Amino acid sequence: GENVEQHPSTLSVQEGDSAVIKCTYSDSASNYFPWYKQELGKRPQLIIDIRSNVGEKKDQRIAVTLNKTAKHFSLHITETQPEDSAVYFCAAEEDSWGKFQFGAGTQVVVTP
Amino acid sequence: DAGITQSPRHKVTETGTPVTLRCHQTENHRYMYWYRQDPGHGLRLIHYSYGVKDTDKGEVSDGYSVSRSKTEDFLLTLESATSSQTSVYFCAISEPPETFIYNEQFFGPGTRLTVL
Image (cartoon, rainbow over all chains, first blue to last red):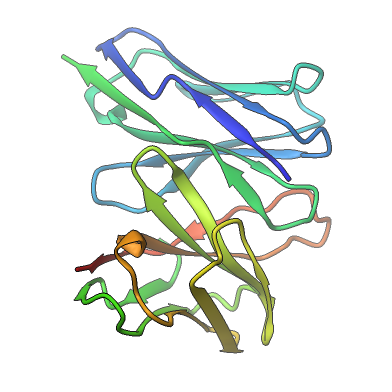
């Protein structure tokens, strides 16, 4: 089955700086890679996703890149703000549709 | 937020007792999932359902069973709770688009379960 590794586990950044979270996956048949943000005490919510036929996708200050050859994908947050402080999870959809493997999460702390 | 509720939201129970968690959706989505969330492990799939009475195991299914008799309800049962099952449990739903290109999951608010 799919295995997803996520790094780093914690990330502290100054407000205004960029943050990058990296994930690797094992199943070359995976085609869909979502990113979720979870604020303290809340449910995970989708913030951006990317499909295997796309190399990069942007949404305002958030971008995701995918390298299918190397089997890794990354989340980029630019101009970080205190409200970006949360836990971020990457995920990869397994070959059998509808099942996901999640990374262990990255705690991002943005300090003013 | 998508129309997903979980009950109870908090529960404290003792080792060896049965526990049932309920997930209820009003979105008429076909797929439903149960995950557990523990520090350092992210979200791990326990069981999922791709339709009424159609369920399958996830990576951490031991000690758990599920049932889905209606589209809107997905029940997770711990037959005999153990301390290792202390966790936050999230339900999720999704609906496959016709082209099966991607599958966005919507999560419920979570249930915090403590087994003493």
